[in-house]
Length: 117
Image 1 (cartoon, rainbow, N blue to C red):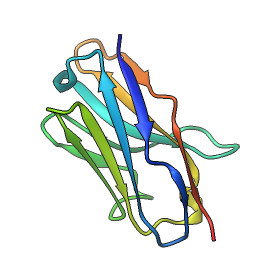
Image 2 (image 1 turned 60 degrees about the horizontal axis):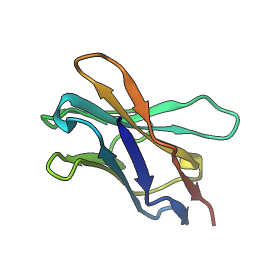
Image 3 (image 1 turned 90 degrees about the vertical axis):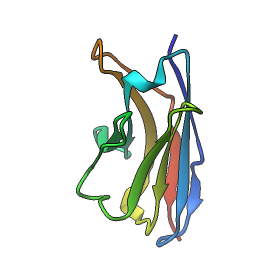
Image 4 (image 1 turned 90 degrees about the horizontal axis):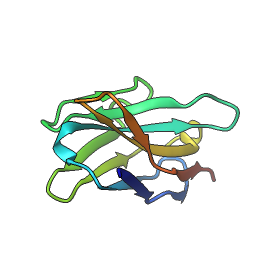
């Protein structure tokens, strides 16, 4: 059973940085595209960034140049380094794992990021 556990959220001032982590278990990590999504209050969940096992990345335009996604295939972990944070980055951030074989995705429970002075 695939399980994803996020950590690293919290309160940060505008312009600050946070690093989110997602630990995966119960899966062959290398066959999964890993991603970060976020959902702000009253809004739909949206893509933040994805990364393939080979390291190919994709970013939402709103975070490009500020956020960096990475993964450690040996540790079965994926990270999101968030710099120059803005109040509009406030959201619950979810880790997602999508199998390249079945297309099925699994979600973590999320971690809250609040950007406020």
